[in-house]
Image (cartoon, rainbow, N blue to C red):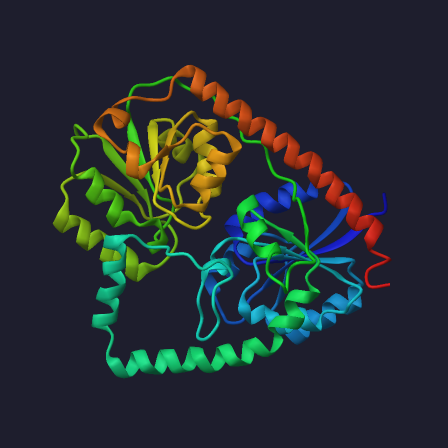
Length: 387
């Protein structure tokens, strides 16, 4: 198999580290990583400074010149934002383009641009947060923001069709998202790309009811308020609720903490910064239940870790992830029907834990075998694209 000269356009350090480790283990890829941003984000740049092999680019023109000069076979976008459409529409036709759909870029509405997947992301009490933000923002400022986004969206729209038609592969997180995207007339030609992924294994301790994990970040899409208000009706006997808020929206984080202080006396521990791995693993070893209020695809890494550790998982029934995990066959629970005193006081049985863990292992093995096939297909296509 000919090696593929693959350029990764990366966005965030926390995702770069595990993904680069997985890709670097595949001998068929000659990987180059470039950190690409439109504006100064010094904190993220400082994280990438730890990596001697990372390159930097701050303009689409600079990046296009680099792609042409280095003769890359393929460009792997770690997420594609609407601001990337101009860049993608101008990438030479002989270069294969792969889009790893992180999630949020599929559900965002911007100006006149509709989301790729139009679903309601917020439950009742989280929706009130946006109403609070609206009331707190002067009308003139709201109008200015709306007008600015509307005008920008018209500009981005100019490049949308050519950009999407230039994409060859989509690397989805869920099968349902891929099915929806491939039904889009501008993406009906795309094939499914499999990236290598690490197999999560963990020493499972059969435990009694312990800590409860809630969400994965300081983002409203976690619907924290709706979950806490549901838990507030139950007696948790003082058990700790662990809420990771180490990244996301600082304004939302402040609102969330202030609101929860007023509406609940639950024992909540906020994780405001990234913890050392050993400390995080120790904390995680005492978690027996996890509740994710996300409706879109989000927190997949956390959910896989919970499955590997034998943790009982709750999701909303209209969640993309709930539907995906149930269709695969995982033993998971719904927030609407199952978030009860009884289910929070009981843990998964050893048989259920073994079943979920074995299924996770098989899915990982399958995905990695398909990743080799994707590499082989890229190798065979690199000289023939648009020939």
